[in-house]
Image (tube, rainbow, N blue to C red; front, side, top):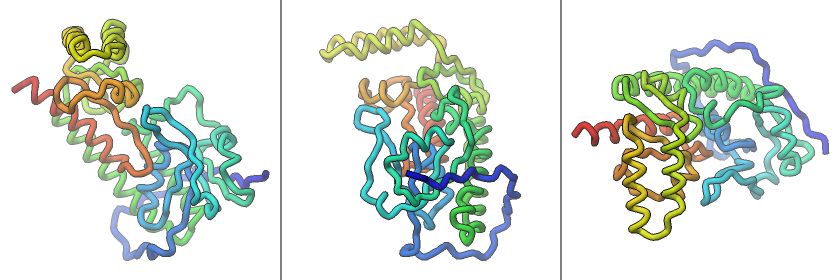
Length: 282
C-alpha cells in the first residue's frame, strides 16, 4: 500500500486578526479528514470548523485507554493528518491506498507526552500553525477560513491563560496526571509532579472495594495532601475512583477528543481547580 505522505511546510503564516469577508463552505460540501490521535483530532476539528468532518482513527474507551477505531466513514476519506511518519505507519491499514496524508513533523520526539504538549499554552500555537499549513495544502480554497479559526483559537487561549492567572496564581498543585505542569505553571501556580506518598495513597484507594474501607482510605489520601491546594489525576485513575465532582480537592484531567473544544477543555481544568480553592477558602 502506498500512501501519499506530505510534510506540512514549516513556513510561518502571518495571522490576520481583522475579520475578512469570507463564507465557509456549505455543510453538504464538508470534506472528511482522518486524524490519528484524539489530541490532534480536537485541534483539527476546531481549526477546520464547519468545513471539515474529522474522522478519528483512535480515541478513548470506557476504561480511559486509547484504542484504535475502524470507522465506516474511512471508506470515503481520502485525506488524513498525523503528527509524524511513525504515527501514520501504525495506522497504515486503516487508510485507503489513495489517501493523501499530511504530517506535521518528520519525526516527533518520542519523549514528548502528547497529553502534555496539547495542554501547553506555549506550544499549542506552534502546532496550530502547522495544522493551518497542512489544512491549506489539503484545501487551498478554505485557507482564509482556517486562518481566522486559528486566530480565534489563539485569542481564546490567551484569554483563558490570563483568566487562570487571576484566579490561580500562587496555588500549590500536585500533578499526578503526568501532563498538566506547563498548563498550571503558565498561571503562576507552584506545581509538583511527583510525590510518592500521595501516589501510594491513590493506589491504595483504588484497591478498596467496600464503601467503608474506601471512605477511610480517601480520608487518609486527603490528609496526605497537606501542603497542596489541589491534586490532579489522570483520566484513567479518575474513572476508577469515580468521585462525585467537587466533593474532594481532586481534579480529574479529562482528555481531548474529537468532540471536545480544546480551549474549553483547558478553561474547564482551570475552573475545576478554582472551585477547589474556593471551597477551601470558604
